[in-house]
Length: 76
Image (cartoon, rainbow, N blue to C red; front, side):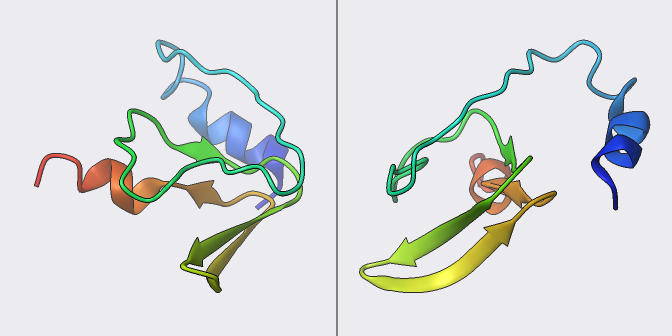
């Protein structure tokens, strides 16, 4: 899906949300294991590696969400 298509679909859904853009340098931790998440992230550009110990368990790419499972499991 093109980013412009995503914005069209979500324009009304997110109109009352507090959205912001952040940039991260290579090697910076976006989340750490055990963090309480009050938000999810959408990858606009680049990729994110998810590590467990020192092993890569998932790589998120442009136009994917990060933190979904942790965010929605918050109230289990």
